[in-house]
Amino acid sequence: MKSFEPPRRTLMGPGPSDVHPRVLEAMARPTIGHLDPAFVGLMDEICGLLRQTFRTENALTFPVSGPGSVGMEACFVNLLEPGDTIIVCQNGVFGGRMKQMAERCGATVVMVTSPWGRAVDVAAVEEAVKAHPEASVLGFVHAETSTGARSDAETLAALAQRHGMLTIVDTVTSLGGIPLEVDAWGLDAVYSGTQKCLSCPPGLSPVTFSARAVERVKARSHDVQSWFMDLRLVMGYWQGGAKRAYHHTAPINALYGLHEALVMLHELGLENSWARHHEAHARLKRGLDTLGLELLVPEAERLPQLNSVCIPDGVDDAEVRSALLEQHGLEIGAGLGDLAGKVWRIGLMGQGADERHVDFCLEALRAVLSEQRAKVAVSA
Ligand SMILES: *Cc1c(COP(=O)(O)O)cnc(C)c1O
Image 1: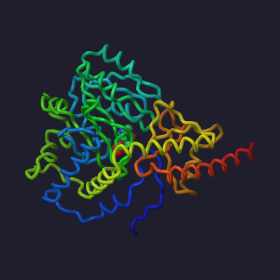
Image 2 (image 1 turned 180 degrees about the vertical axis):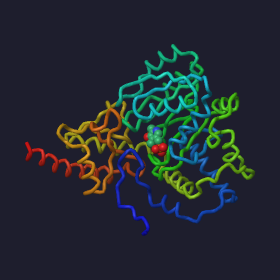
Image 3 (image 1 turned 60 degrees about the vertical axis):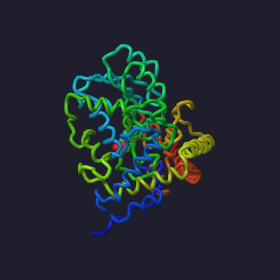
Image 4 (image 1 turned 90 degrees about the horizontal axis):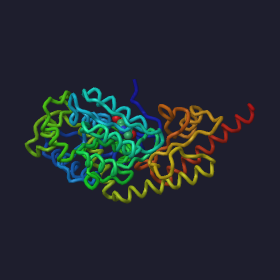
């Protein structure tokens, strides 16, 4: 047996995104104990940096030990009890996953569906909210990575608040990539991931809970069915300071990496990071225009960090993606669900949101598509 040597790749799919060498170096530093006073300091700094990134003063803000899906499940299992009603907005894959999680919590789920590739339809949500006064939570995805559509989190949260509902908001792909204002918009249970616009390896899920959400958790009449994700237990670990109670062993080296990624984001500035994603998207769009390729999502609802490109007629989806990978070391994403075979997903996330990545991707696509077209012309 030999050590594993990963091939060199450029990651421009729906995540994971390219990780900066500074983050990888940080992760290679010596492991220390998770109750070491030095580690307590690191945990506190990470929570502070996450508050800045989420734009919140929420005391309960920390990275869940697990990928985005674990942060997601942590929000659902803590905010929902058997018999509760939740309204879930679905305009892609991840709204569907919200439904599955809510059902496993014993909740009644009211779905509001919008077409894939479009933002969540606020008017339809408003109707559902009015028709279901018993609903206590509204769940939606801010940045739908399966399609590249951005929903209006601010308006949806305001609607929920007017009706006394809490919100569960998926910001896995939005954090660091587009404006996200947890406090100003009044979001309640918000989860994200490290592997998208934070340019960190997968495996951690930053979350933040409003005071209202924490009250709801404290007032539960049933224990959270998951021991690991029960916020009442995890709180003591992340908020206990020097008196932290052992809950689980935090993934020490992964947290070194997250800390470094957040320090880098802090150095760049959050607004500059949003601008960087926007500029990279504009450059990609201009290049796609010259290649005659179109984006799926209408301009006003587009995410800069995830671009769904319509696959032209006669072009073989899988062949193009494997040629990009084999000949250029470039990974882009395939379409999911209803969009399988219809779109490619080009991610411009974190470190990948720069001119170098955009130009490399456009050049590789140009080369592979001209090969494909030549083949089609020959066989025709
Ligand atoms: C990637 C993603 C997730 C899941 O994150 P994992 O780290 O893969 O578990 C959830 N929601 C959205 C919108 C995502 O893009």
